[in-house]
Image (cartoon, rainbow, N blue to C red):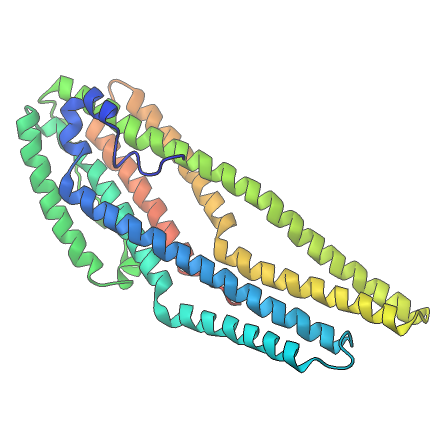
Length: 334
């Protein structure tokens, strides 16, 4: 996605194209809250991952230096360099301690949770279109819907990180299916707007994330395999070199490289566990299949529009619930 959140903040051209549903597509109170939570989530996530990776790399550098000392690559000793490596290792540990007590991850997840709940509320409002006679009636219903649901969400978020653990997708569905068709032309416009901004947008987003994660997976899997095989091969070579009475310097170098490969591989495992790449890819693939099914139902002219809206929002919130449960296990330590 070149430009994020175009579903929540549609272009003026799309607003003009689906004018009957514009009152849903733009709402200052909801949009302002969404932008605030989105911005806070992005900042907290960037800070958490940046500091976490720095901590792992600092500890890794000090660990590699320690291995080099153990294998005798600094026979005379270099107290200044050793002190520097000790400082780097301490900095890594302090950063990890800071991440643990600062609540940075909690701020990221809570703000992401809030932003996605607000995104869903915006689109749940589309289910009210069949209830309404005209644009003025829709505006009144939407205004009341947003007022009530924003107040409920604020109370829920007041619980802090506990809200993520207590979250039930079924309880977050405020819309209800409606079979009334008060204004067929307005329903048709809302149907097209909902499909374009919600279903098609999420389908593209999920597909782009899957492709991105596949590329990352190819690189990380290859690197993990290389590090493990290198460590295993070097371990065997070190034993053979010792058995064949190779020079001690050669044996030490081989053993050092073997140990270093395993230490780097361990650090990479920590980084991979914090990325949630594998779990995210599986989640997006399941979500993409569900999106396709909902899109097929929406394209059918006899499909109940408000019922499909509620069905899709339930799917989106279930995906959010899966993310919350998986993200709670993110950590930059074993």
